[in-house]
Amino acid sequence: MSLLGVISRQPVHLRSIASKGGGGGFVVREASKNWSKSIALGDGGMIAVHSRSSDWTTLGAEAASHLQARELTGDVFVATLPAVGDDCPLGGCMLQTSSWHFAYEGAIGDGDALRRALDPMWCPPDVPPNGPGELIFALILSHIVREGAAITADVAMAKAAADLHRARSLGPVAFICANGTNLYAYSFGRKLAFKNVPEAIVVGSPEVLAEGPTTRRLQDGALVVLAKRPHLGWAILAHP
Image (cartoon, rainbow, N blue to C red; front, side, top):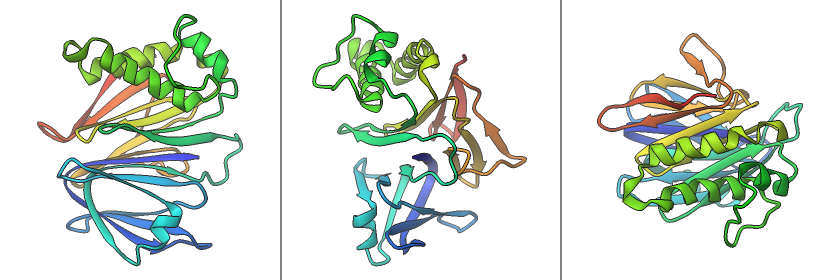
């Protein structure tokens, strides 16, 4: 799978289209049409849209193909897309709670080894030990809820990134995680990149977001936060 995320201060429109080979696809565009990007969900792809009313809408390829040119508007988008031309077989998934959406891609094959690397004593409730994406999301949520209001999402994400650094020998991994206000991206061995476009910031896997003079590649093991308040911008929260 490949990852794509967008965060914007202004409304961004998501219009369903027929993608190549059938199935659901979308065009993401800024309201004044200064930029746009076509994406194909394909088999197994998912996209989550956060609206200004603080609600999330999640669509798979089959649901998208039946929207009949319906247009959704939101300020945060998170998507998992079928990878094209990847030499490394990557698994992926999209997971969610009421306020968080998490998209994962990676080649970690042993979930139990991942759990031991993160913390041998940690046993997340109701999470199978052989699901790397599920384990990483559970790890993030555990940091968020561990100290309640005493810990911010930025700090929780930085702690999760530090934990993941101990598992770097298990294979490449990347994730995008968003709560409707901020969007976080982490990469090790997958070379996620991000760039500013008019009124928005886009982050994605290398086969989704082409390199260019305005594209910044996320350093291996680094965590970046993309925020829309108080102004649109980004910051590195954790270094390898």
